[in-house]
Structures are given as structure tokens and as C-alpha cells.
Length: 264
Ligand code: PGA
Image 1 (cartoon, helix red, strand yellow):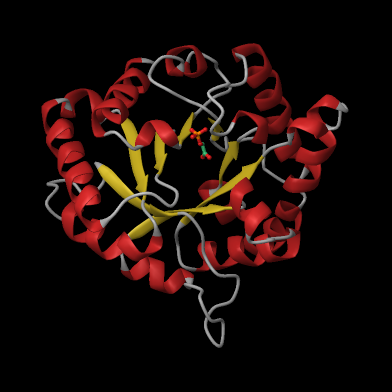
Image 2 (cartoon, rainbow, N blue to C red; image 1 turned 180 degrees about the vertical axis):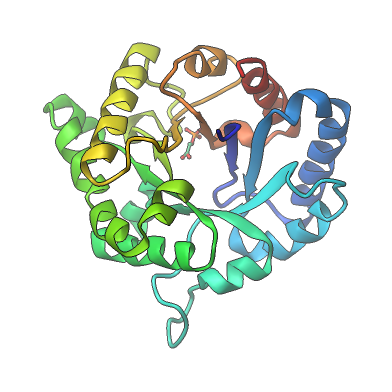
């Protein structure tokens, strides 16, 4: 079984100088709490232009599995005339092992639709990495009782992929449930709500083709902090957290990660 996940999404924050300070503090903190933190899978997702910097810094780790490197997005195509984009093979060269696909901010600002997301997932799988498919309903969709309908439409992309990749898809896939109304608002979903939606997502994964013996990790994201993470991780249906704002301070992210380790 996977360890519990703590994925820090740095979004479009940072600079060469501040990233260096953050990652050095994370590595130093990791060394102090290694016995605890080895029980979780910690990942950082810097902006793409800083992947090389982070790869260099993370090489200093004795165990490359300690803090892993991930990417916030990937191109749908393998290579070619796609100005401004970055392919899965390029990410792989920087030791990226985890890639977000379909974060709500990418859906909103970059206009990724279901077919683009399907192709992105495909590229991640072809390069041997693990995709984190992000799904979540907006505030208005929730208010109008359309949460399940929206999530169902966002999971639909997995049907065709399951046919192409068979067991590989289900063994590598990670899903992150991030209600859009909870992202960056300080207003996380309640544990009851998270448990209910996560159980529902697990069932629907079976409907889109997941074999019953495989358990796909379903993470929660949306205003996760050191203050609320214990209650979230206490839920049986939650396999980890995707953290935005609270991943930007090394001390806070280490504390949050230690809380997750304690719930193992
Ligand atoms: P947040 O962001 O923790 O700042 O709410 C989460 C995310 O967007 O992944």
C-alpha cells in the first residue's frame, strides 16, 4: 500500500533565492524528523522553470525517495510546435515522478478541457510517471446540488485510458478531490463532507474501470493546514493531502507533514 501523500503545490510563487531557502530548510527539517517523515510520501511541485534548481538541491538527499519532485502541469502532445509548453519527457529528465493533471486553476486559466486532460494523462503514463488527476466542483455547482454530476464528468476521462493502459493506469493513478470553493479560501470542506465525497469517488472509480483489488489513493486539497490536517487524515477514505498556501513555509509544511505521519 502507498504511504500517505503530502504534496506541496507551490503554484506561481518563489524565486531562485526563496526556493533555495525553502528547499534547504525542508531538507534540514527532514533530516531532524526523518524517522517520522519516512512514513509519508512528500512531494514538492515548483513552477516548471525551477525544476532544474530543485533537482540539483534534492540530489543532496541520501534517499531520493524522501522528498520527491513533481510538476504542476504537462503538455498534451509528445513534442513539436507547441510554443510555451513542456513535454512529459522533459519533466522526466528533471527527475519528476508526479504530475498534476487538471488542477482547477489550469482548467480555468489555461482552458484545459476533457480531451486535453486525457492526452496529458496519457503522456504522463507513457513516461512512467504518476498522474494526480484533480477534480472538484465550484461553489455555484455545489449550491445547485450538481457536485456528483460535475465530478462524474471529470472522472469520465479515465474510461478510455483504462482501456489503453489497463492495470498500469490504476496502479499509478492518484486522484485529488479539491472543491474549488475551498481552494485558497481558508475555508476547508468539513470532515463529514470530505469522507462522503471520497467514498463516492472510490465507488465511481470502480464504475469507470478500476479493478476492485486496486485502491487508488484519493487525496483531499483545499485550505489544508497544520491546524486541520489531523482531522482530515483521520478519515479512512483520505490517502493524503494536496497543499497550496501552507506548503510555502518550510516550517509549516514540515509540521503538517509530521501530523500526516502521525496518522499512519
Ligand atoms: P490551498 O491550495 O491549499 O492554498 O487551498 C490547494 C491547491 O490548489 O492545490
